[in-house]
Image 1 (cartoon, rainbow, N blue to C red):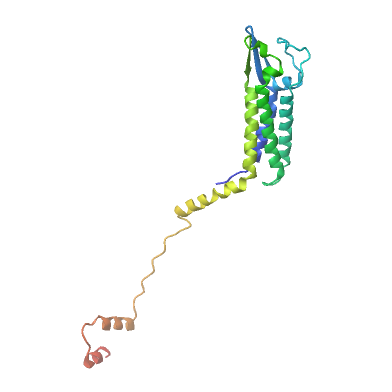
Image 2: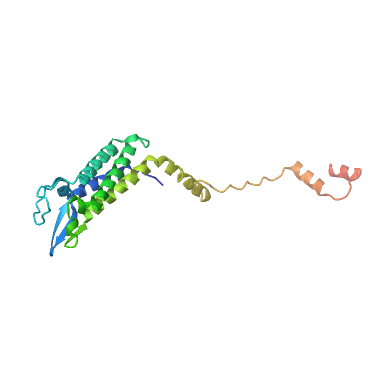
Length: 214
């Protein structure tokens, strides 16, 4: 069985986490109407949606999402630059991925206060969409995959002895052939005479011995 290092999985998860910033993060509903905003729109305030107005006309960029996006870029760069299983870049990938996931959670829990919508909780519904869910899950998965990559040699060292033991318990028939039986060799004339002598019962007298040797 072959075990591949999970660094490739780490890069893929981080790439997914960054791409999903351009997909819906939040859906705000009010009076039967709703509008979706992506993580990029909330992060930069560059949006084409004008249906929902907040208290402030000059909406500030969401710093939590900006930090999370930058952490994702740094984690992806560290994962791409890592060489070897014990590289410090792998630890950097884990650190930045975990910090990015933390700020995505902070965005989730401070949404009402950040956009000054706490007074409208009874009239406005906020639903966090699949873009935010997938991005957060990708960041967490990348952090876990980076840790697994860092300790990969220790992980597979505990798995390989089991494979060796299983191969010993169930040996291959091609590698372990049964021993061939030895061919019987007919005894020579002197050996037959010795066997006949040993087979005699009772004490042998001198005349008997002389008769045997004739």
